[in-house]
Image (cartoon, rainbow, N blue to C red; front, side):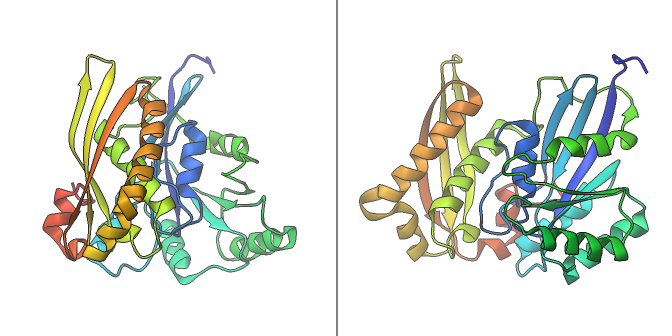
Amino acid sequence: MDKFTPRTAFIAIIGCPNVGKSTLLNRFLGEKIAAVSKKPQTTRTRITGILTRENTQYVFLDTPGMHKPKTRLGDSMVKAISTAVGDVDAVLFVTEAKGEINSVEEQMLEKLKKQGYPIILLINKSDIAKKGDILNTIDVFSKKYEFASIIPISAETGDNVDEIFNELEPFIAEGDWMFPSDMITDQPERVIAAEVIREKMLRLLDDEVPHGTAVVIEDFKDIRGHLIDIRAEIFCEKDGHKGIIIGKNGAMMKKIGTYAREDLEAFFGTKVNLNLWVKVKENWRDSIASITNFGLNSEE
């Protein structure tokens, strides 16, 4: 085949919360475009990552972690998964070396099986797992489902990640690229900025706060290509959460802003002026209007 013949592949990344899907996407791209945290359910919408290698363009769809929703936001997150697998060439199903298939994984695998998608099983965090647990997980999954291949990987260290591209080869089709070769995501700059800010909150705040927060970019100005001026509003559900986010004498807010600005400057390649504000909006995760206004509705 002529190496200059353009090829494309649309790949969904699916798995339970906190198995490392967003870390894997960021590893593929070499850039941080999806929120990453040890806390579960950090991805709320479908994030598209684009990787062009030689004559092949891979379009990766990172999805929210599979879970049983408890709020309307949770419902929207689950719908985002179904949307992502609507029209893809293959699925990367990410799990951990735990030696069992949980009920949520089973439900999704059954659905994928009926839809006939090729599935590559990725057993992530192999760098910290015991070899016996990895082998046991391979045995349990392979006895119940037929996978195109099974690969133990570490999205954190990059171990075996290149092997994924070898296994995706049969599912790549000749066809014009959908995006420019230097593009790494189809997400607007505002979405990337909000993701970066929220990731810092996920890393720095107490467990009960982050999932009750949303980041909305109210203003985004690129001033003559030398400075990006961003005004972001952080919404939380309780007055007590507002105090935690701000911190004593504004210390936590300053830390969130400093870390977020560093990442944003690295991503955009220019100076960033970041202004953060905190507002309370009770029970916003159960409000369709709020979810839509915050850009978290999977149907949009």
